[in-house]
Amino acid sequence: MTDPGFAVFDIDGVLADVSHRLHHLRGARKHWGRFFAAAEHDPPLAEGLSRATAAGEQHPIVYLSGRPERLRTVTQEWLDRHGLPTGALVLRPDRDHRPARVLKVDRLEKLARHGPIAYVVDDDVEVCAAVQAAGYVVHHATWAVQQPVLRDAQERQGRS
Image 1 (spheres, helix red, strand yellow):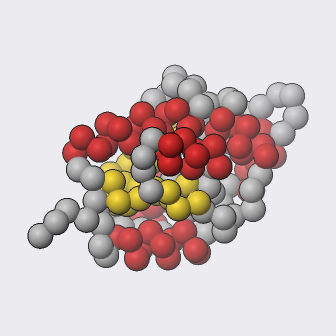
Image 2 (cartoon, helix red, strand yellow; image 1 turned 45 degrees about the horizontal axis):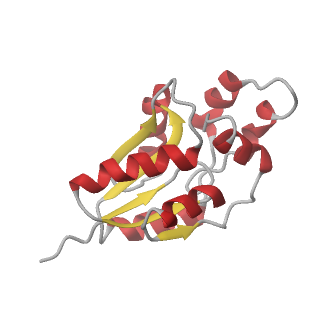
């Protein structure tokens, strides 16, 4: 029997709708504490949940997020509350502000030491391009409304 490989899912913009908290990041002054404090109230994205549930029937799941490590408990409780498959949760170290595309490729390379990666699902176009350039199969999540402020947080601020 062959190893089916990990199915790797981003959270924000793939499984969780963060649009209700983006107002904390608009303008010159970013309110990161408030932005992250509201994460527990993210509504689920039905398409993402459906895809993760289906993937969990064939693959071990890994949740790879740019959320900071300090949100581990909130994030795990959110995943559990929404009935997502059990899987490893890989978060950004609290003081790591590398762009999401750099952080995620680094984490995927470390994960690949433990087994093959079947595919990665992410909403960030720059992450998708970097992951694909690193040799992984990517599914671009397009079911959430793309928000420039979230892209800035992920790629320029290195915060989500």
